[in-house]
Length: 460
Image 1: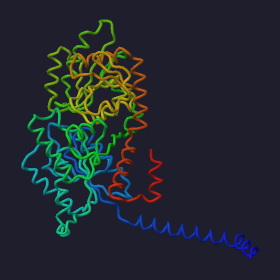
Image 2: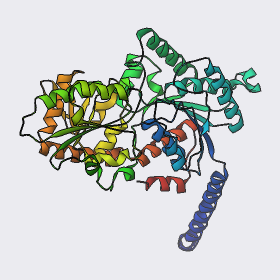
Image 3: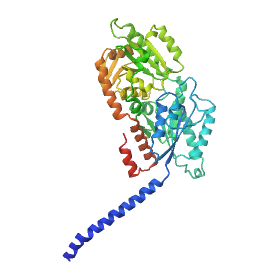
């Protein structure tokens, strides 16, 4: 008996193990082939307009970057007003052909009924598994359309809507610095209803933004929120040749303070000009010259140019307008400033950090979430790992923050290096795409096949 058992252990067990491995491998390959045979999940992404700014790049990157084996993306966008720069070229250059709903724009109007109708037509044709809206206007019209789409089916009679998940991303919010008290309260109520009625997940791009939207304005439940920071195309910034200083005719020792963004009320460039006037007025005669460079366009450009002349600093402020190569200009600045009233996480500051430039900013929205640890708080300013902030929205405070970095070349270099490392390791476009893919898989209750998981794990 013992001899028989020994013979079985020595001779038969390896055979049994071999066939077990073959069987498991065959079953795994069969399951994998079935997974791969499934059609991609259909994602419809809706944004109100592809105007100049971070959200336009964000939706294009997600439309092109999601793994095509798992997701089939369609981008729907509205029209860009004449007063704003149109960034539709960025979608075209990336190979994205959006579906345009011309009636969808920033302002509320009766045309929004037409917008909902046209969005519904697209949804019934595409039959999405997931609808992802971006920004306030598209978030309202898109989620209302999604609600109708989900319930406009015979199975609704026995309370079974279409299986379709709905996500909304707040890139910023319009609850401060945009409208009056009554209109703002109306928009808060609309968002509260939409979050409760037809939103499966709310994405915010910083911890500070989550505190504002969930706790301060009481929009949505805490369990609905996911924090997914912005990402940028590092290749768009890295390795760009310098040349902007020569184009401006800037002296070798001239300190260039850059500001990149739309010229609109919420960006508050008027505050930057007022602070610049203080800095230039108090500058010692023998000190290095300073020039403020404002990159961007918008409805306030003429007013801001007039303000610079009125303040007597027109010769030290260059308005260069909208530039398609804006991401290439940061390397020629000595520091980058932002004086917004309200922000989500400003892409311009992330791009500046990726180029190794220190920041001067107001503490608006999610700005402080990308500045690292606070090192010191002194007077009207706070010193952080990646830059300096003004402690209030006043010209003297912003001027003091600007002077701090203008006068400290060594600090500029150190802050820029730390900010660049942070941007490269935490704020890449590919990290953003992986985070969104993971959230989609979670909401749709699907698992990536082994090969797809392996491919995702090696992306950089």
